[in-house]
Every structure is written in C-alpha cells, then in structure tokens.
Length: 588
Ligand code: G3I
Ligand code: 9MR
Image 1 (tube, helix red, strand yellow):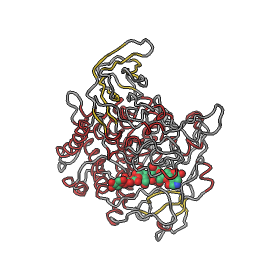
Image 2 (tube, protein in one colour):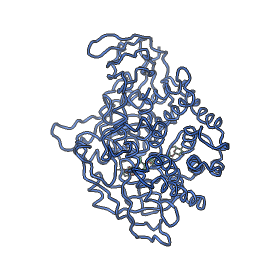
Image 3 (cartoon, helix red, strand yellow):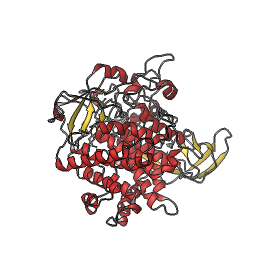
Image 4 (cartoon, protein in one colour):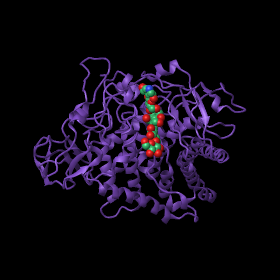
C-alpha cells in the first residue's frame, strides 16, 4: 500500500483571512481553497461534465479501493466502482489513484465518495455544463477593456469608470522615425489590458485574439447565436467577434502608416499602482515603444485571419476585411525588411517585455495565415512546411498556430499544399500529449517541466492542440477529446490544490488574483471568468510576498494572494484557450 505523501507543511502554512462582514476593503491575505486542502482531498472538476464526456477524479491513495458517486439531495448511490492502482505523481509528491465514473450519463448533481476522505466538491452532469463558463470567459475580456466604462447593467458589482482612453499617446524615442518624431502624439484607443496590469502588448494580443478568431472560424454557425452580454450585443455581429474587434481595432492603430512597422507595446513607463483604471490613467503618461519584428509578424498573422473572418461582415464593418489584409501585407513586408528588430527594453521603460530572440515561428505563422487568406503560393514557400514543427502554442512560440489554421482550412488550399503533412504535424504532437497522459499516474498530460509561469495557460493550450487532433481523427472512442477533458478537469479542480483555477467558478476558486481591478475594486469578489496563471515552480515574486508559498513542489507552487504575480495573475493569453476549450468540450 502506498500512502499519500503530500507534505503537511506544504498545505498547512497558508493563512486564511475572510473579509469581516461589512468590510470595505478586500482581505489582505487569503488562500481560501488551498486552505480547504489541508489534508489531501478528492480532486475533480468542480463545474461538471457533459453526459457523454469521460469523467475522472483523482483520489489520494489510502486504504480505500472503491469509490461511490452519490446524487446530491436524494443520497442515492448512482455508481460504485474500483479505484485504479496507486502510484506517485511527482509534480505534487503525491500518491494517487484514479476513479473513472464515465458510466454515469444521467443529468444531475453529484459528489464522489471514498471511505476515509471528505466527499468531493459537488459537480453537475448535464448538457450545457460549460455554457456559463464559456460566456464568462469571453466576458472576462470585456472586463479588461481599456477606454470604456463598464456599466452596472452589464458588469453588475464590477461596473467601473473608463480607464486609459489612450487618445493621446506619445511616440517613445525608441519608436521615432522620420515622420513620427519622439514626443509626437497619436491616438491608440480600445484594446484589452494584457493581464493584471494596464498595458497593451502586441505580441500577447496576437495569440490571444487569434485563439478567439480560430474558435469562430471552426464553427461560425454555432457562434452566431451566442450573446454573452456586451455593449454591442445584438448589432448583427456574433458576440465573440464583437469582443475580438475591441482588440483588433486597437491593434490596427499600432501600425505606423508610414512604413508598416508595428509598435511592440503601448504602456506606462512603470506598472501602475493597485488602483482602478481611471485612477491609474489620470495619473500617468502612455507611450508606444519600439517597432519589433515579432510585433509586426504577430500583427500580420492576426490581420490576415481577421481579413478572412470579416469578409462575411461587410454590411456591419464596410471595408474592414480589405483594410486588414492591406495592413497584414505591409506588416509582413516590414518584417521581411527588418528581420532582426528584436525588442530591447529601453532603460526608462519597466513594464512587461514579451521579449523573444527566436522569430522563425512568428515568420511561419504570419506566412501561413497570409497563405490561407490570399492563396498565394509564395507565402506557403515562406512558411517552409518541411522545416516547421508543430509545438504547443505560447506567446513566444506560435508555430502551432500556423498548423492549427492550416488544419482548419486543409481542404481549401492550393495544390501546392500537402494536407497529409498538415494532419501528420497536428496528430504527432497530440500523440505525444496522449503518451504523456498515459505515463502520468494522475492520468493528465502534465509533468514537472509544465509548471512554469502561466502553467494553466500551457495546460489549456495543450488541450486545444488535442482538440485539433480530435477534429482530424475522432476515432471511435475519442482519445484526444478525452485527454483534453482531463486537462480542462485539471484547471477546474482536478489538481492537488483542490481548486478551480477560474475566478467565480467552482466550490473553491481564487479570491485574490493579481488583477488590479479585482483588488482595488469594492466588489468583495474578483472579476469572474478569469483563469489565473497557476502553479509556477519559478516563484519569481517570492521576495515581495508577505506570506510564503505553501510548497516548493511544482504543482503546489501557487499562492492565492495579490502579491503573487508569478502564480496568481490573470492574462488574456491564458483566458483565450479557456474560451476555446470550454466551448469545444461544451459541444457534443
Ligand atoms: O524561455 C525560457 C526557457 O528556455 C527556460 O527553460 C524556462 C525556465 O524557467 O524559462 C523560459 O523563460 C520564461 C519565459 O517566461 C518564457 O516562457 C521565464 O522564465 C519566465 O520568467 C517568463 O515569464 C513571463 C513573465 O511575463 C515575465 O517576463 C511569462 O511567460 C509572461 O506570461 C509574463 O507576462 C506578463 C507580462 O510581462 C506583463 N503583463 C502580465 C503578464 C502575465 O503575468
Ligand atoms: O504587476 C506586475 C505584473 O502585471 C507583471 O506580470 C509582473 C512581471 O512583469 O510585474 C508586476 O509588477 C511587479 C514588479 O515587476 C515588481 N514589483 C512589484 C510589482 C507588483 O506589484
């Protein structure tokens, strides 16, 4: 018998302070859910499952060898079954067994029960299990809009004044050219705040808005009907595109009309304080900084995608599709002429870098999107298909996005394309992820190296890759979809912290994300629908945190405290795959 080996000190060290009734400021320290896990607990998806989904939980290994699923309310035992073999899971130093309760397909609310352990968090089985989550994950982008007031009708307790109008933005010296001089003023309104900070970065915007557009491209008819509650809802555009447009409109302003180059970011010189957006923007200057090759290529890729998506919406946004294609081409031309304009942070600028010295993947992605949109073979040649691998997408490695788009459009390319190669690329990576799941005692494609900054984003992007494979090769028992479900389950509570990592969703979820409007606001709860970065073995923020991380084990290196920007920040590039995965797994 292998006993659970979770270090007691790991979980016990967290202080929990609930806000006093009537308190008008957020509690300074809280680790609500982690505190609930002071003993190893049954870990499962705290939201639930579609009836047809695979359904698994992870149970700390003890003496029990069977589980039961109990219907809430009636106490009826809906299923009993054997627990799988006990085995160690290195990321958390925890020996676990798996409970597979996929056999339950009857809609209802349930808990999982194992002798000697507390019952699991409740979960629901039913159609539409992820509808609210998908809508909230989209609305999280609305909550992060720059330059617009959030109204009580749409934002409820999170209503706030407009911040950062960005109608008067200075050209930083690093971005000056013959026509736009240092200190000149441009307008660069709209866009999403990147994360818990109030700056707007083209590189991270690229992958984020792409992921939303990709979801749309894969099922336009499904998205047409979905309204999530945006200022534009009902205007004839699908809400997913309304939200994407808020950022695309901003991105267009980040291109220098004189040469096609794209500014790397629009930022304050330093990170703003922990204040609401209107307070922060009243206080400071905003600048656009250095044109970079990475920004130009990510911009070109996204505008090429936007151009094909908005072809169908000429009535709502006349001329936009053509404008985007022109912008994409000129950014591409600029990047070809400036292939080594690596972003270097100027000494007077101290905000996020999104620095990246390796740009083969950005070239490949932009080439792929321009090829799909224009069907010009020169772009396919530039993509160098034989030399471009498929990898899990991240802000600094976007090769996977090229293959993802090519897979979506594989039947609509020129004869020069090789659809079989496209399928091989996607399936090869997905097969690696399947093998990783099979090696894991937790049954989830997660291993020690995955727990870096934004690990939940990595997990969701892995799930998105698996779902691309499922589209190509579903097979009889949907192995890729099942592996993707395991990863979403991990994010929604099947993890050793016992927490759903999405604000406002699940029995235990983050209370103090590193998100300035959540912390400075008076709502008493964080803005809902945001996935936090998650466990990060790097713990780069530890020096500034008044409380210790609960553990140095990778999967437990998470702190539900505002101080923890390295494990508890939110970010658009992590929320976008949440939208994709919750939507895709929420559809039959
Ligand atoms: O690329 C190396 C890799 O080679 C190495 O093996 C690995 C080992 O630690 O590190 C990798 O670099 C990491 C890099 O991200 C790329 O993944 C760095 O350690 C890590 O510190 C870095 O973290 C980034 C962080 O900013 C600090 O720069 C995150 O990815 C990125 O998501 C985050 O983004 C911030 C913005 O700057 C500002 N806005 C908020 C946003 C989210 O926190
Ligand atoms: O708040 C900032 C966060 O949005 C960034 O992701 C993070 C890393 O670049 O930096 C945070 O700002 C911290 C700064 O880097 C160091 N001093 C403390 C700041 C947080 O309050």
